[in-house]
Amino acid sequence: MSDDRISRQRSPDVEKMAEAIDAFLDAAGFDTKGHPHLGRSGQRVADAWSGDLLEGYGTTPSEALGTPFTETSGDLVLVKDIEFFSSCPHHLMPYQGKAHIAYVPDGLAVGFSGIVRLLDCIAHRMTLQEWLSRDVVATLMSELRPKGAACILQATPMCVLAGGVRRPCRIDATSFDGVFREDAELRRDVILASVGES
Image (tube, rainbow, N blue to C red; front, side, top):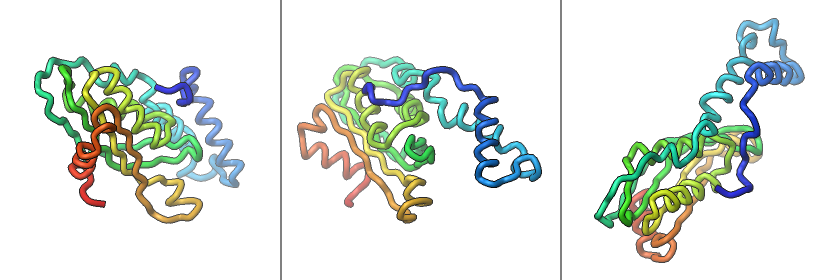
């Protein structure tokens, strides 16, 4: 992945994270000690961030993808409508949606669950939607050496829904490499197969 991606410098200190969330709520004017529904909020948030939301840092994309197997067919592989969530580093707010991931094998393939695990590994980090689509494609190209790979992400960012213009919207981020970049008709075919006519 590119050097501008956000890497984790050390293991999370869950206790300090919980204390920081409590301090944040206190600074926002809430009594974390005096209300039963806020008493454990700091710990809950720290557990969520150190676990589910950032669990992708615990493995590499290559490990998540799994061991490839020999595939002599050059037919298109498309795994679509994969639900995912991720965390935007700008506002520390989530975005969620569906991913459509495709590749054309050139001797190697991987199980469908490996595609889902790869998406989760990269999505469960601090990452932008545009980075996520590019990093999925880059990993497929590097690990499987296919004729081409594509990733289409359709997501709703909470920072747009809850802040700023405060409107629900769907953001599409796409990345294409190999034959998907070179062949406009094939690129159109995978877009139509994934999301239909826009």
